[in-house]
Image 1: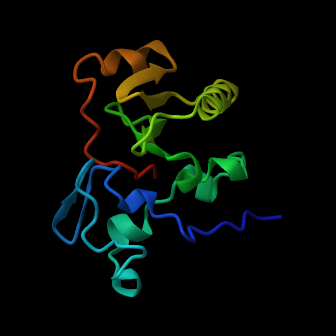
Image 2 (image 1 turned 90 degrees about the vertical axis):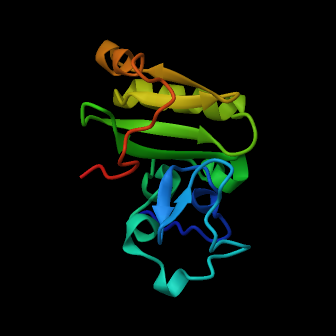
Length: 152
């Protein structure tokens, strides 16, 4: 049985919790997409990148439980690539500290799947995974890679 989830009332990826650009409008923490109010005002004509291509892990990953929907826990998780082009899990807080049950679940998930993770906890980023993954962030720990969510 396939995963049948939809964004519905969740717009966390549009609220300025990602570093991206929509129709030449920069999106970053504190600067949400200008096309979002309660819903997307350009939904039918939204650009392919990033709007149609971005998929959070809750939306596409059957391992993520229902209670981990981004607008329910104020946390956004997605797979992306690091500076060495390896896939890892990026987890950002969305205006509130990450709930402890979500952090525990994510840590257990990344341990089980062997997936490195960069997770924001009370505004600061922490790194879990192999030594090479952690070491590369020592160079510039707060700077995200240029391409925030293409993994293929």
